[in-house]
Amino acid sequence: MRRFLITAADSAFGIALIERMCKTGLEDVEWIYGTYFDAKEQLDELAGTYPELKEKLILRGVDMTDMDEIEKLNDDLEGRDVITDVIHLPAPKAKPLQFKKLSWDVFRANMEISFRSAVLILMKVLPRMAKEKNGKIILMSSYYGTEEGTPNFLAPYVSTKSAMSGLTRALAKEYGGKNIQINAMAPDLTDTKFLDDMPQIMKDTVAAQSERGRMLSAEEVIDVMMELLDETNKENGVVRIVK
Image (cartoon, rainbow, N blue to C red; front, side, top):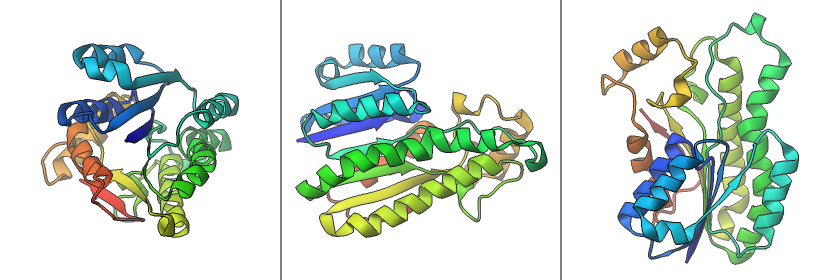
């Protein structure tokens, strides 16, 4: 049986992933442990639509910038059966600003939300997964964290997402021999509330330059994520660009 930890389960990607899992069937899923910061009502509504999910979904509110809350999450997970799959989705909002106008606090906040939280959680769950010699981990990077996708005026965001890609490659090498596949998603801009702080002209430019002629949808990103989560897929250390 598979046991999922989906952090930021209330994000657009988290909700789309859980809904896709419901549509494809939850027979092989023992439970889904999902963290949320807001939008819990959407997860409750999803559980109402799929009765089987109501029995399997375990929700816990966690502020990923708060180390004490992450530690409490880890303590709770330690008392449960070993997780088989981790999908780590927390991410800072992409807010354009010139480097000369930034402070270190902005960089730190970006790193805390996604990178530090990933490190702290994986430090707890990965050793247990390694003993079982089984598992899949997906970290959320970004096309903006790749060399070809790096935009202007987003240094904190780009730095954080590049760190997520580096963590993916490093851990994949270290744990690949334990039958654990660790990969990252690197989607281009996706049409979600996450982009609320981004100027419309920037979003329009990305859409115009895209091969699709528009921004990605969360469902299109989940298509690729489901490929990486397939038990027959043994890709490891891959940063999968979706654009």
